[in-house]
Image (cartoon, rainbow, N blue to C red):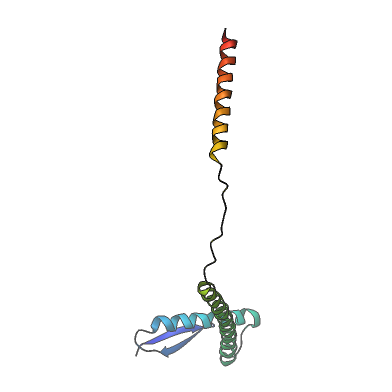
Length: 131
């Protein structure tokens, strides 16, 4: 079983851990040391047991707050998933009927005739103006 020396609040502690857990132990020790450092900066020197107790309580408080936040986010996610399931289970809306006006052939013929007359008049005016 590996033995490590971890630093908490400027003090060294010999601890053992399972093979392969050294990295996790060092990461946990760093978290505890960071809290102990905050206490040391604010309060100054204090007994080892009190420092460890206070740092542990501060970490526990942060852990509880994180747990509350996770629960809140899980509830919001569950609500969003339920809403998504409801939306997906709803029947598709009926296609909207759109009516398009049909122009009768007599109107298109009349418009074509008017266009031809306008072009003829434009050509006549153009011919007169170039002379």
